Length: 336
Image 1: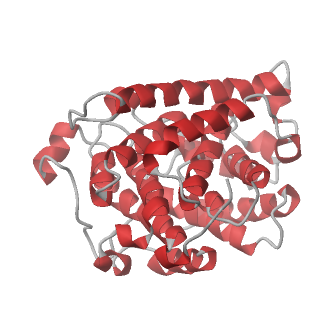
Image 2: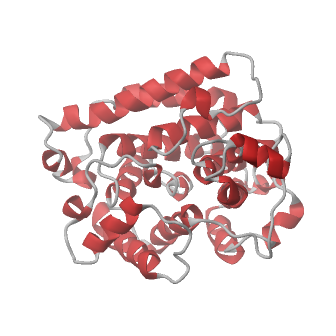
């Protein structure tokens, strides 16, 4: 699919700000039940930013880390990008602003990265947590061919989350942002992602991943990566079934998973985005009104809707109220 960018719609900015908005709305609901969220915010969940600024979580912080690493890279090759990602992740790990209940997988891997270990040794090999793809949105916004996009998405995931499902789900998440920005519609996305997953199922990107498959104890590179794609395909099948049924307005996690792991975060965020393609704020609110990883689900839903619709998706006053607005605006402008 050729990337045809409509600059007047500011799709890169819309995606980055949408991610942050969803993150902010989901931040206070992440560890609440749906009943508790609805008692606090009403039946449709949170629909207004709170605070000056409205605070985000490590999801946005790490997405910005990935974004700045890509923005600084003179070329998008593993040799160039890996040290930049490492530096940005380590800066995040020791930042005083890293006080938003960060994921233990990211902290553990960053501790080993800080010792100078090869990332294939530092990564948490058995983790497919949503930290792998909550931060990958910038990869879908850079000017790169699809092979490079795939390598970048898997590399940034692999620095902390070495499980093949984390790699595959990250590639699919970045591809979703890319496809939407290029003109795909939200309802088309599940089928496009399933097609991509089937086409990539046996492709191990050795240039980007090195010997990761051996460290995981797999019998071959193809077997290693296929296991991840298969779990993503299963999640996409659950998504397709859920979208084909009447929407009861309840917790989307019941159909597509709670989002603590990467393939479920992707599927549940897509459910929210597709169901509410005509009401972007409702997509965020739906993602934030779950019994699962509400901030990550709402953040990815925002990234998808924003990539499809651009900055016009979002209330005009929000851009001045979100935390890290200056960084989001700078990266968005660079990629728009």
